[in-house]
Image (cartoon, rainbow over all chains, first blue to last red; front, side, top):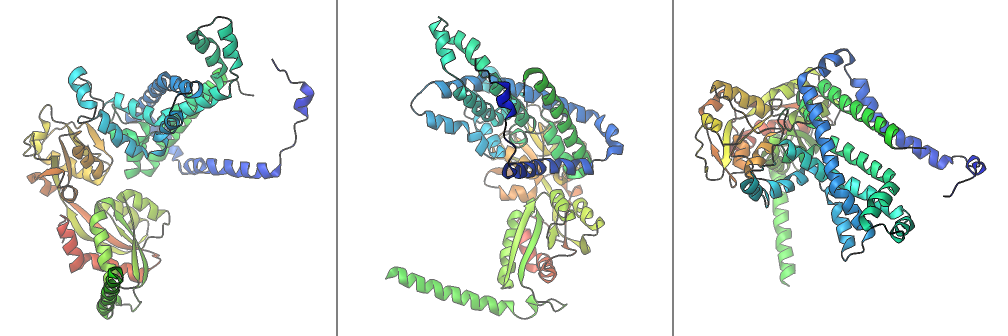
Length: 270
Length: 262
């Protein structure tokens, strides 16, 4: 282990203005829209609006589907990230580029693409329906799928970066000491990249929670089944700006609280 | 050789068109009652369902008024109303629902009274060829038939609700779409068997969907109002454009698109 002497930490150079100024500007730019929401929030009617059953239904659905989508992304995305980081196979650069496709694709187009594959007349959808009786569009499973499609690149990119930055000598040492590849992966590699994995999962979850375009296109909008908070916000915007502001704030408050709680518990930040 | 000849012909045609346009453009058409010249850019905020017809009307208007250029911002009516309320530089606002127009007039953002320039009626869009044999609203409740409606918060959904209530049909759709294009797209993709949409949207997609008219739609007609925006950057051209939409040429384009005109 490399332990840095305490004195070295104290001699940290001051913050250059050339960094501080744009950093503060960046922060203001990110936070100002939130201030706009807070300024327009109808605080008086807030409790009544929050207690509406449709709001709670949409919130519960949002949290459930985003969490399931993140689990799905972890299940498929971590192995994919490992493959990209550790195995030199032909066409790796192409695969790496393909992984980012959902990031580049406008989410609505992603939703249409999912329909063309998993829809009733899709490449796999018809077969899934006939063989297993599974229809994904307009179902909660469809919401999870749409969210996972859009959010997975965040996880894969974060985990791959962590894996490539991790010191591979630990894995080699484990192998030398007789650990099989799977044991090495679970007992050495995963703990080594845990912070990157957690960051990727958080990004993935947050993206899934805010997902709108692919969800409404692929899974539609039906209260209790596929209407997540972003969909409810969009429709509220059609009739009642204040209701939309309340819903947005609620989604923000809940997600920030959850992320902060997770950070304290699992991510040891300096 | 041939290329040069073609170019010469093109130039001649262009010159003739320009002369023709100037010929049409001068006189009363480009000088409204208050005497201000109609020129420059007209910023038109129009409902998404007007995309095709207003694009054509805009081209006609530019041809009639040389020196003008019509720029469109197509989106949902309520989103446009919100943008105008936040000070977007709109000259003309054409909404798909009186409610969105009311947002603008009540905020004092309208110059004068809005005028209804078109009406839109609902129909049922079904998979091409109508394989499920849908003949009316009551058929939509058949088991095994999947239906998309617009959400009640948007005009097409409110109109569909009115029509379904009038027909006393209790319908459980699989999705409540954010706008009429979303509902139509689900039919085009074959994900639902039917959707209640506007006649104009079904007409624009007639190659891919089949339209089924139903009598209750007469009781759920949607009015499209238009108004010149207060503090419009180009009020003279704005008034001329609004007049053009309601004029003979504008009405012809709208009728062809499937709208009814007053």
